[in-house]
Length: 107
Image (cartoon, rainbow, N blue to C red):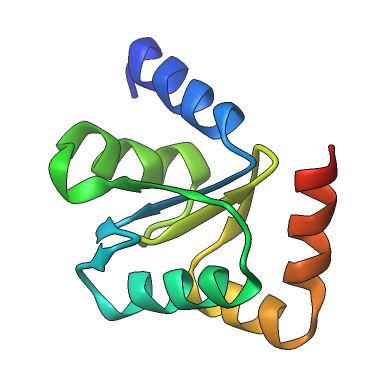
């Protein structure tokens, strides 16, 4: 990964309290896993931003190396990598995700 791409990803992750790197966007997810993440975050009713990896090849490849996670979507809360669709579903079901997001938004 180039230093420029790392700096760009650092800035994106730090800029937003809740950020999802996904296929498509929150209004039009382009895969089922991305849609799962959008539905969970919409259910929580919290503000979040999305980055469409399909429109930027460098980000699509770079984010996998950045997080050391091979799949998309990827969710960041308060600058910290949380996981993908399966992890988010589990955190949502056990109540941890809501707490995590509330703490992030309050900071």
